[in-house]
Length: 109
Image (tube, rainbow, N blue to C red; front, side, top):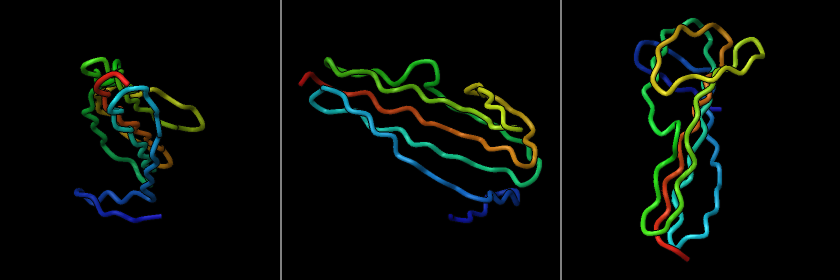
């Protein structure tokens, strides 16, 4: 578990990154997205500016599109979908999960 000091004196309890592996049948597979989870220890004003939540990055020259990203918030044991671009107040104990999109592939196998 890693402690990180962020601007504005926000101190997440834990920062965890996981790699989600996807396999495409293309000449050059796209990149894999990562998952970040941030647990809030106190109320905070949160702004998210993200892209590629409805559709993943497109592939080129026959390559498949990457997996779209997703934002969610675990609050009081309920998993809430968070829009790509939003602002909200977190509550102590909230866990924000940001799944970044995977990259699009290139070429046919």
